Length: 390
Picture 1 (cartoon, helix red, strand yellow):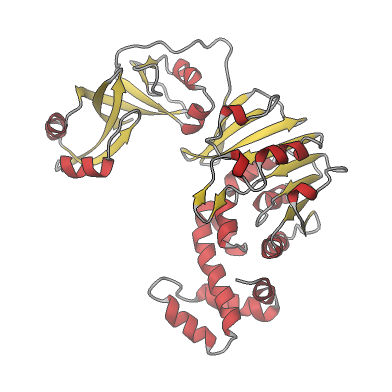
Picture 2 (spheres, helix red, strand yellow):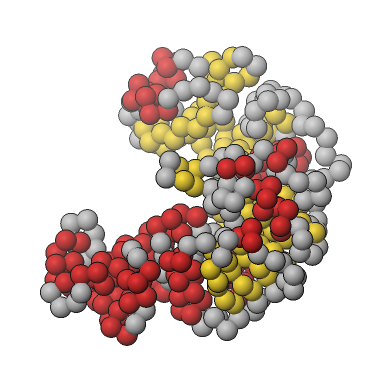
């Protein structure tokens, strides 16, 4: 989609085509017929732009919920954008005005503006800038925030209370994990961002700890049990602990922080329950704090599975009741699944080298109950735990 075609989509005629495209069948089976019908009365380029937006909005619903039906996207912008729940949560930390570098389609900018926080977004791509502006206008907050074309590293944070930056972490070959390969590189972006009184830089959740600047407060964020990102809080925004895990689920926010009273978790035999810490808890090195919450220890000091005889409900871990622990072999595990009448099987692993798809085919469970098998190690010995979620 070109910038000119997108601009035409925002005109009254373009909005009419978009409305018709929204009502059309855009599934794989119906897309060709819908495109042919719309091209009978509208310019082909405009129809193409409208259908592209409709299909992107369908994909975006998982990230943005009902808001997706009013928003505009580019394929890359949708992939990189912050999910609504995360952006809304983070917006509350800012006071503004905020200079946002690499603003993309404007998801963070939009949520801050909806919270009344003024700001200016900057992006290098003309189409992305046009899309971000359209998103602000779609929610009537273009008087609170704006977007301009420019290179992130050419910006001057003077006059802004805070900087927010979301560097590119994807290329045509996939995700980028080395911060030096971010667009722009993380070190360059941090140097610029720290010229403002406060700053926040969004990074990949797997960021190496040595890449985190001194004085930063790092927050790992998960939504519905899936780690989405990490954020480096700097300057006046670096309030709170050095490490933090924040879990968003069903509108609730729960945060786990280091507890100076917590010691290294003890190593103990398997108890009645297995607790699987949320990924954000593991990334933030807060497994010890999670273990203390459930009066538990680790079955192996190198693997982040907690075990306890107590059942304690906490948002920071998923609990499983352990039915059987056995040395791993396909033959033993098949017999255990038959004994526990397991037919619907969930496989999990940590510290265990196995092809789960192949193992599932080898096991061929045929019982009437649902069950979970956790594959892990105690020392060098592979073990399998037959469990059920609590």
